[in-house]
Length: 343
Image (cartoon, rainbow, N blue to C red):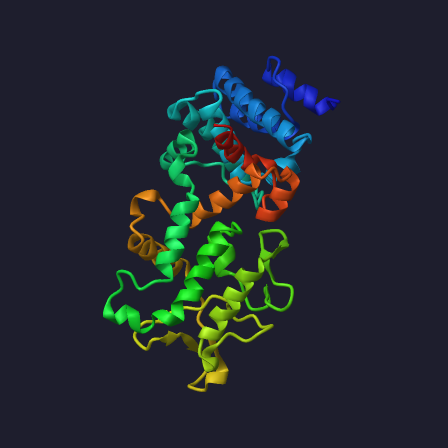
């Protein structure tokens, strides 16, 4: 029910049939006080009302100030995606909507509101959303099998690369499998520590998301592969079990061994294994894809994760289960995958 203040603000603004919460009315009123034309802040009201109505349906809750503050980039991008694909907005029209959301965002930032996500979107992002998923955003099973076969082989390797190859095969294959089969994100993969990985009788990994940690059981052969990778690492520089050492470790191609970082001095017990970086993983995948002759297939960590998500949908797994498994906060993220699966 409208409060007296809400009614007064609506009357002062002379809004038509626009229904928006108090925090939006206060923003519109600030525009009026700055001398903005009546038609301008009414148009802004309509844009924001449409977005909040959509959020209300998607999240099944009234959009209060607290709900609006908690919106994520995924929420905004899903809405932009809907405007581009369902309502056939042009990118210019989308940017006009985005500029309104940005002014609402900046208004509350200027008032000292913190921890709110910017609704900004770049031209490249808008074009990417408009184009939706394409076949190259996923990895065919035959192409992945080809990739793994080549990763385990010596095809196309230089004499220098062959020297340390036996130490890298199990690590690299494990990484590809965690992306393709289990759908980890790049950040989740490089953040894995020895405490997160359980390789005893019941093998699995604890994946740290933004708000919670989720457990993913591993197939027996994949768990064994990861155990073999750890055994490939020379014992003096091997990550310690049940520690915060990184699970995936960087490789020193000059010394042909896994890298170690010293904390204080040259004593090895005062250091730790060096984390494998995002860039190193991206470079490794690129090189292996090229070796496999699959450079035109768009294979990368994201397309492998996309494939895992799409496969879960095709297998008929429930929405809630998929969201929990892949660490989604809302069902909005699944929409693009479901739309692609329909066609």
